[in-house]
Amino acid sequence: MARTLTDVELIQLQSYSKESVAHVQKYLTKNEVPAHLFEPYIEEIFTCLRGDIFRRFVESDKYTRFCQWKNLELNIQLTMNDFSVHRIIGRGGFGEVYGCRKADTGKMYAMKCLDKKRIKMKQGETLALNERIMLSLVSTGADCPFIVCMTYAFHTPDKLCFVLDLMNGGDLHYHLSQHGVFSENDMRFYAAEVILGLEHMHRRYIVYRDLKPANILLDEHGHVRISDLGLACDFSKKKPHASVGTHGYMAPEVLSKGTAYDSSADWFSFGCMLYKLLKGHSPFRQHKTKDKHEIDRMTLTMNVELPDSFSTELRTLLESLLHRDVDKRLGCRGRGSEEVKEHLFFRDIDWQQVYMQKYPPPLTPPRGEVNAADAFDIGSFDEEDTKGYKMTEKDQELYQNFPLVISERWQAEVAETVFDTINAEADKAEAKKKTKHRKFDADEKESDCILHGYIKKLGGPFASAWQTRYARLYPNRLELHYESNSKPELVLMDHIEDINSELTTFKSEQSILLRTKEGTRVVLTNQDEIGLKEWLLSLRTAHKNSLELLANMARKAGKIYGTDRESNNRQQSFQNSPVASRSNGN
Image: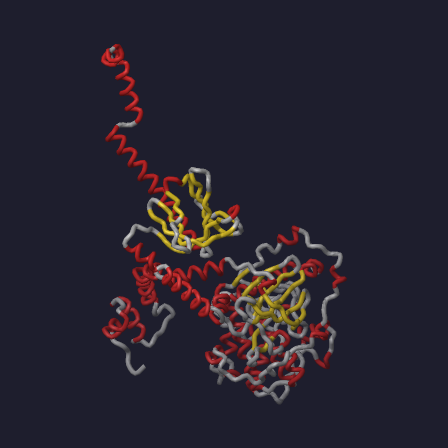
């Protein structure tokens, strides 16, 4: 900044209080920017929004529309019918991954389907449920463009389904086999994006535990994301100590049985992955050996020899990442990913540019091609394996809390696809209704109408069909108008015996039930559940007020004219009096 804003200029700029401006000015004059610098401003903004601004918003059409969308979101119950499933694009230990399209919005996703019987056969229930938890943790809140995140989870009697970001550019292992090894510059691009993916997980106290090129997927532009959180683990409360992962990428502390570890394991695997991108194999898998015990032995004992062709910065980076001593390993000295990002190998990297995906990818996957193995090569599971297994009621209970919708991601999907179209169509429909029934509106401005609008009434032969009516509620009656100009159907408040306090289901619809004193019933519904609840509240209030009014009128009449009992007593006293006897004698 050329100069610091004065107190007066800051106050005039946003009308903040003098105390808040003084708080900010105190730090700015010292060129200090603490984390709490703008907290007084934020609190004043919230205070302002809590007042008249929020009240006007709640009373506006925008709030009604927001509630309609939120109601839709909260009632999402997905099934396979909500997706058009395409070809298989991958296979794992418990199931397959397919390309799919969501039917209502048209958005493309990957659907990972795990076979429940196969999970049961391999006793993998804990792993499957853990993956759902890990995906929900990384997918909620601030978006991370470097992790394959989840938008939905649902299950069928046979499958557990994760609906994930579609990455149709293949994985780094596949491109390594097609492209050959990468240069230091190309590797630096992939390393930077993976670092931000790991950073996102570690900030949520998640250790990934399976970092390797096969789990790094490319999108259609060539940017990468970390995929498959099946082995990921939450270390916020208790550090893991299980030896899981892929041989050749597992850290020494992971291989050492009974040793607890945290995110340190991922930085060692990260070093192994970078080495493979540069040389074509893990640093601990010399001469392409497949002996897992030999690979583990070398991981625990061997000092990695780095080629002279590597730059000095790259050599120090790999040596620091592949250090067997956790306390000396890069990324494990107290500041996590910041230590790796500040290494000289990444000195020319602008990390904000990386996050915004502004750097051009070194490799753009061919468009129109499936950058993965053929469906025939992927193969399929042998159904005979699980033939003897049946899903019991107890088995299914394990998955009763499995369904999930990630709110932010559903909103983003709708915003990207159908939000504007649906809102525009709804606005047109509402405008059409207002135009068609402006004669009602003109009447209601001068009347005591409480509520009016379209509603459906159960009617027709045997009360079997929903019939649209234009309803108007008054303090003493409910009018149900037909499309024609014929006289409306009237439901008088003093003829109503009872109105259900809660919505009741009729013909699969949430409905309002009115019982009359004549023994008939009136059933009303509306597609807008929020609007229907407003009708229910208004009807019950009008009915209650009507009953109270009639009771008050009866009491006043009693005071003025006397009650029936008093009238009867006076008549009986008169009949027993001597005057009455003389009259009868005459």
